[in-house]
Length: 207
Image 1: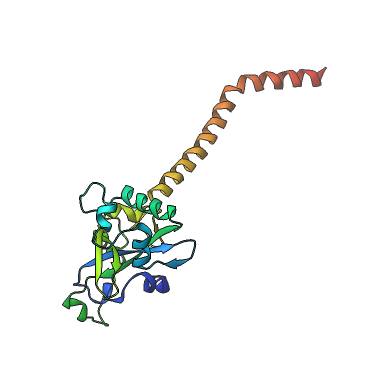
Image 2: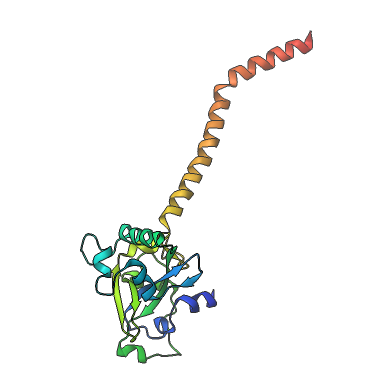
């Protein structure tokens, strides 16, 4: 497996070794300033809310799915509380009886299962907040967030792409081509001038 350590850090073993299970992306809060993962109670305390009211606070259009704009609002609210928050993603499986049918000898070996923009593994994205009793509250997030700067340290080559970087790259390419094109245009326009200058220089040398 290429990049084995990276795969083990962000992909559960059961993702490949229990191929019949449903899979989704879990996003967890991470503080870039303190360089540590944030606990659920830290997030809720900073937002002055609880598990039941977390979604209502962030989901401004009440469609039960957190959009990129709503997550940016969440990041801004936390920044105002002194928390420079981002999200770290992990590809996990749902806790179903199939998880126990792990087969070490057989696994999904096709890289395209993940490394395609249309990968079904990225269809469901959730923010997870854990209670002290072990129960988990999940809040659905739109898939587009995986292609933004909000998600840190989770990138599946060919599967998730940061569109802003694509746009910057295109601008750099367009700028480079523009400079070359402008240079060539100027050279074409100034051909007569350069020819007259050369003739004058040649006549001056002959005299």
